Amino acid sequence: MSRYDTLHLVERTGVVAILRKPPGDIVQMAKALVDGGVTVLEVTADTPDFLNALRRLKDEVEGATVGVGTVLDAETARLAILSGAEFIVCPTLSAAVIEVGTRYDKLVLPGAFTPTEILRAWELGAPAVKVFPAATLGPEFIKHVRGPLPQVPMIPTGGVDLNNAGAFIAAGAAAVGLGGSLVRKAEVETGNYAAVSERARQAVDVVRSARRRGE
Image (cartoon, rainbow, N blue to C red; front, side):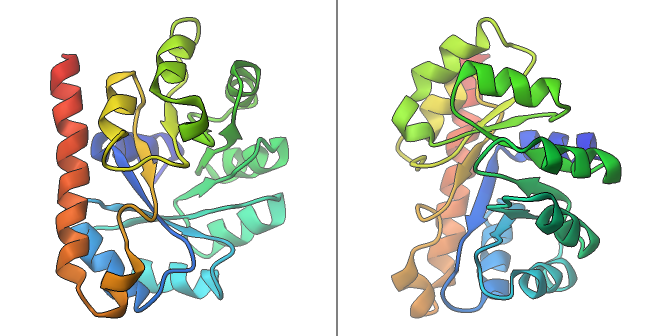
């Protein structure tokens, strides 16, 4: 799948689920998210044995599009891609990581905080940008930056939850990244994966509703 095919999947779903050091069975957790309609899954590179987790999700979770996040350098990006990652997410802007993604035709979402960083990421070849930490900036930031930079798809992440995701989408975000607000430790530890699926459905509904209001 090309980087633009992956971006279209992300935009269509509207939600990227961030799995950072997840408790319990990561495969069961991922299946619960997919059952709820959240099919784009990001395993962070600070998760123990993250490459094995990536491979398991790709092999065992039907319908999932799986990538690796918290990538800080080009070598980690390359290892992730060679292990099957369809996309790479960074907390910061790295030209070297974007270059690796371009070489392998895989989507890279570099982290950016200012309009200058957002434009720089786009100029370096990133098809979209992760705005991070988004809660610090708020939905109005997305709205204002899209004025002069409407060509750059932005995916706010960091402090985004079910309460504010709709506002970010209404402000023009292409999708949102959700972590702890989707997967709660207590529920996973007790095997309550039905609650994870329900929250995933709620997230998808929030995005759809915000998009309909914006039409």
